[in-house]
Length: 192
Image 1 (cartoon, rainbow, N blue to C red):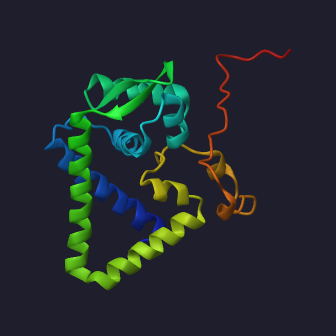
Image 2: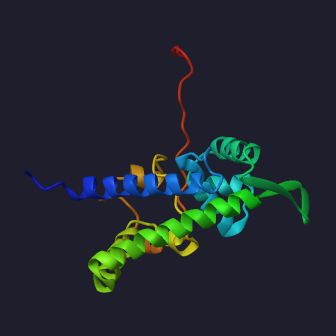
């Protein structure tokens, strides 16, 4: 049998973690949670953003962020609050249900790490953490780690579309990359 390549190992591990988190949050009132909601909960917990800022944090369009926020508000996971400095703006914050779900997800994340520590020891887990942190930082994710959040993996970014030879040095990045505009033709196109 051939050993699985690293990309498959990481992708399969991500799926296993997502499955565990999904099962855990269902016990805390998150039975309507979708995978993308977890990214929103982390981003909102980090800074109570506006919808526009949420789009930046997740690396998605403003329309996509607005739809996610609307869905999560209607399910009771988020609340909207007025900005005291500008009444035209609203900020997103976790509702009590969102706080419970986030706490349950974090507890499950800690349980996963504790299981790894019991099975392989503290030194091995610290080494794994150091490898992952280094890899993420070298690929432009330092800001996300510092804020304890991540972009949704299925949303390509401008950085993700560059080839490795043309990527900017990740150490010089100061903000989350924004996706390139998506110009999709609507119906058949005619020459002008």
